[in-house]
Image (cartoon, rainbow, N blue to C red; front, side, top):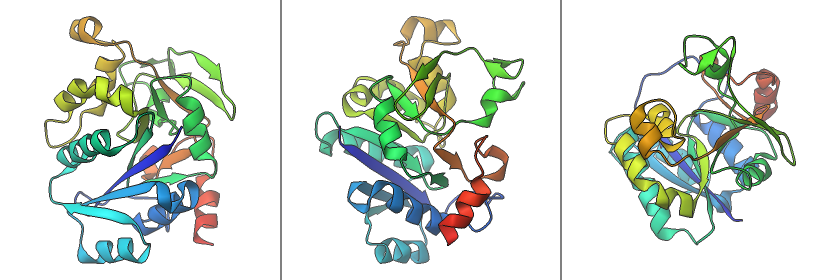
Length: 241
């Protein structure tokens, strides 16, 4: 299965505390190191000239836009459906994630076991009150054994996830619905896809399966949402080395 990384970068939004020394350029360098430049396409949305120069210096294939979060995702997703070969694994990736080497193989393994895959183990799945499907420090789930890690069935993830082209095409009406506002509503999109929560979801959902790796092979670099059980500070220091 061929893996295509669809990377969205933007200079819009509010700055938040991140892993020390890991900014947008370091995340870009990391994704090149982990996935290979030939597999990456970039959408630069509301980017400054300085950011565009970094993309050029890194030799990345990119297009520019001024659309905002949800619209830029719909643009790259619809383009991927038109331009990708049948059977391609599409990895939608935001610009503030750090990956561990081997993440590509983990993603491809996950897509043989579920419809949607994330290698980010989101901390909200272990904190009561943040996610309505979490109680007593966890969500009801099922754990699978993979080639490189364990996998956990989960109720939702961020807009950084992998899916096969054909599955995305089948689910496109759901993604259109939940990316129609300024920001993607990823939480409710995954609830609809997995037929969880409301009666509308149970009736109109398609019973898709989302799995996340245990432990994570990627983390959000925002300090509040660092994936657990990895020494990301050490990993980020290695990235700077």
